[in-house]
Image (cartoon, rainbow, N blue to C red; front, side, top):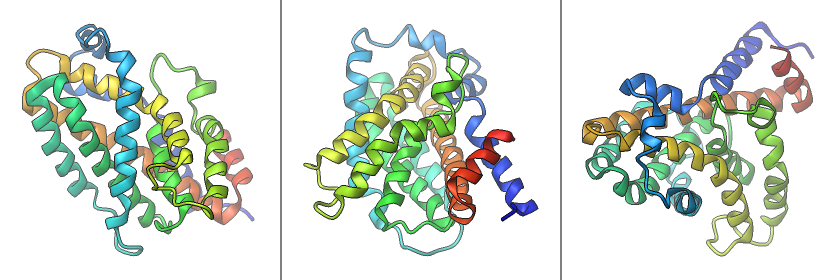
Length: 258
């Protein structure tokens, strides 16, 4: 079955979103300062605590975010979710890096709800376990940065790296709900995603650590932060929609040829 011209355009749009420059480049352009300056200002023990912080944020978000959405509806409410994250970013920015531990779980919950909203708009059933896992996967999709190894950071490479955890969780669903805080599968998946999400959170923290960013800067950074993951979600769920229609191998081949 040949892809229609419209579906080819959708796939090209998805690849442009998924493979374009990453979060650090977007924030640097917005605030006029390279993120490397902020990285030097982060606490010395930052790297040792970031994985735990991001994993806890993902678990809290997965407990609350998706279940307030309806299965059907109109287009995704990207602007409303951006406003919510901008407010939390403004509060977090007032307290600088120290505020991230409090602000991140709230921002992540709003972002995950926005991701689920985008999934629903692309025809996904948000009550389905695989959709919920696909929403969490989005946090592992960081886009490109100058330090990325393309073999490890490309869209399908990330999905392949997470595939075993996703498959295990799908098989586990008959025994226990994935949102159970005691579920080892939820811990395993969020741990895998947190490794990649933590890179983006570190870049966000570095931007907030730059002097004079403050509350207004925190709101701007968080708006870029959620916008980045809305782009990742849009690309991800366009690809998944086309895979359901044409088959995963076919769409992966077309994606790589673009």
